[in-house]
Image (cartoon, rainbow, N blue to C red; front, side):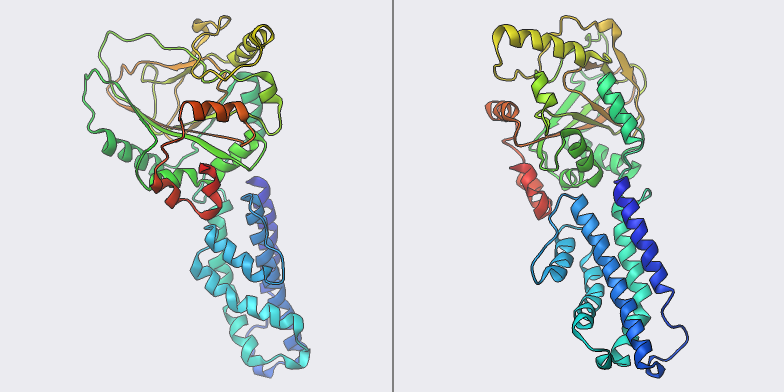
Length: 404
């Protein structure tokens, strides 16, 4: 995302330089043929900058920039269908697209002030409309979260088996998630015995597609796996209500028994868990717990088993990691909106909820279609068989493959 912003900001700067060169306080009917040719070049440069930005954003989303004789028009149509710009923004750009075609094929003597005047007078307004759409996708204070200090986070994930992206989701989104969970599982019953309420697909609601169609999450998944060709493994909501004693001991486990070769492959043939915290969690409040660095111990154990037994099917939710010590486990007391990413081979659990407030989380994960053993696992367990139709209908065409 940062590299995309760098490209986009550079193009914005060039476009703004072009806009400053348009004639001010002059009637276009008074301009000479040479001056009209100069204005035409500025309009052409303006639209070239728009196209450069669209190409950067399209490529960043893992889409293919159109080619062929109609690629200029097809690029705008793709940007609309992919949700990168509004259809009204595309309508505002189309006169400049048409002029670009005219300018490329016209002689200077064919340029008319009556045509250039309205295009030039409206160019700043059209740019402002376009810029607002793009900033929603790319800027720090836009709609989507920021992958802050990504290289540091990835190093932590490699060494400790987990990392935290602070304030990843905005409060409006986490509030919407909490409200949706409550609408599905019912009221919180203080002192009840059903303390944890898990929701797995099918989960109804438009918010499910909104959570998948998050450019920062897709970018992070692509970085972790090493490819933009992704499949959605799961969407899970969990509400952990306050529970009375006696409290159950933490159930330590790893999520799936991957082998070293699957981590070392490119694209990786594993998944990484993404745990979105949708409420602030205090110690003893159903906090996420993990043994830092235990993914390395798990990998050593699995290496030994593979040498003795060979490589069999992946076992899901494997409970035993002989060399991991529960006493080394820590609670991650995250804030509302934080994202915890962790290696599925890490020994992890959650604390019982001893507080008077519920804890809300949203889990998701992605994998690459070359992950043969993982695909065999999800097929054997029918883990992905129940994605709801509403999820598919809510995703744009270019993201439909996530559910294949």
